[in-house]
Length: 413
Image (cartoon, rainbow, N blue to C red; front, top):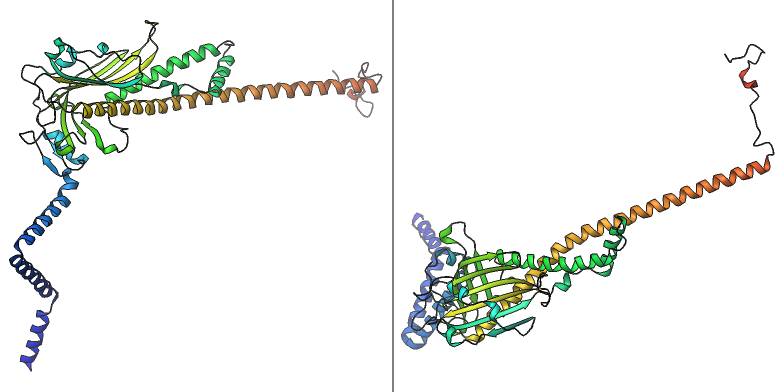
């Protein structure tokens, strides 16, 4: 009987869950092996497909499936099959080489000094992109120059008629009767100032691709500002169709110079090794018609310029034009959005003060009217009392109220 019990215990162990899983896996392996021996070609294809599927599932959320990590004979530069995630770009920015990809005879930041955006004839257009026709002198230094520009529509920052009326009422309460024209002129100047300051803040914060038109993942500029001078302002530009097989190309950049004054703001980047092209990208904000030049219409212009040096690698002009156009449009949209937020806070304060002043004025008028009515009512009652009482105006006190009731001495001393 004991032997029978031991045999039952052994059967229970053999039928346990781990044993069943091991048997199932071994059966699947044997079936796959037999199928591979029977049909080797089909099995090889299926194996490759399974391995590729697992690789895509693992790599896609990590790095966007890297096709190539550097430029070579069959590669234009760092390329991913899918849009690279932010975590991958963050690691890439920290480990990318800080070596310039410009030709050895060209210093970083020198290309933007050799060419000025003021030399471009824009034909008074408010926005556009232009491939600059190079002269013989320019061809000795450059391979390609493309400039895109867009004027900020600051008219949307102007106050409405109601807001102007409230501002005017506020000025009238301060003693300025003829202030409407002055307020309107100040509103125009303030709108231009606000548009320029907002655009400068957007460039300073490196928010170049915040509002790229849909689909938004086709172009992105990821920038991380470093306090350490050896890692200052490294950025990556990611764009679809810029890499191999028209997939997502990654271009590392680094700040070369940054300048700002009362009417001008610019940031210049130069390319690093491992990217898709060689050259510099210049972002610029310019305020026109500041009062010194009456022939130029006031406004704020955002521009982006791509400068490819001679013997430098370049991308297609169509791709570069699209890239610069999307970046300028995004900067303009970000500037308008931030300017509207600032203006909303300012107008809320102004409108509140104006409405509070109007309410206070109305209360003073109501109090004055009420007091005037009370005085008129009191005067009317007095006239009626005098008409009904003939001796109303000749009443004199007799002094009897000062004597004691018993005829005693007077209480007056």
